[in-house]
Image (cartoon, rainbow, N blue to C red; front, side):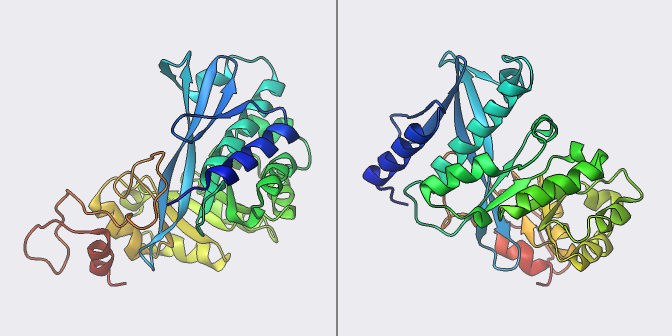
Length: 297
């Protein structure tokens, strides 16, 4: 996928002029953020549309290196600052790096999923997403192409969750929340969000084994007009189970690893794992399309 260097330079320059974010362009063309003595970069994991079998977008994750040498967990980076102000700055910088790398100078229709830190949601009392919207406006990207992933920790405070969804939704973002497998009243709590139902509900693929049949849960979520994303798909069995349950979106290392490269055309991967479907009499290598076909879609 080609990138216009002049366009990318212009968009980076506009961000540098309009904000005090420490962002630069690396030799490989990707945008880097700088926080204390750490360098921040993006990796993107493909998210598949289960029905079209194509890539619908990507989930963004931050990678950090200290002193240009040692990989460092983002949680360790957060500990370099004290109080909420550095946290807010770090979180916003990460998302700026993500959108610059994903959208700047690129022509595609993919949607970007980006998470926010739980403490940020608590420390920023109102107007969540306004600062991020300014970055998107600068580079000419609609907020509707960004899915804000609300971390599972916020599920413990449904009043805060509703407030956060309202703020982000008012700016046009799409919203993803996490299914809480530990709570018996989760569906009732989801209903309590009316009329602020999420656009996407994220389920861990491991729930397939615990429930046996996740179809009824998926059906309930669909009644709230939300898509269901099965994440952390690690095996062929989980992939087939997710599709049979009625998943809309699929994500996991079995389908694609997080990487700097943003590709759409080559993301129906061949597998190296054998799987026996109900119709198969022997194990054989299959592609993602074969797994979905085996599920009867």
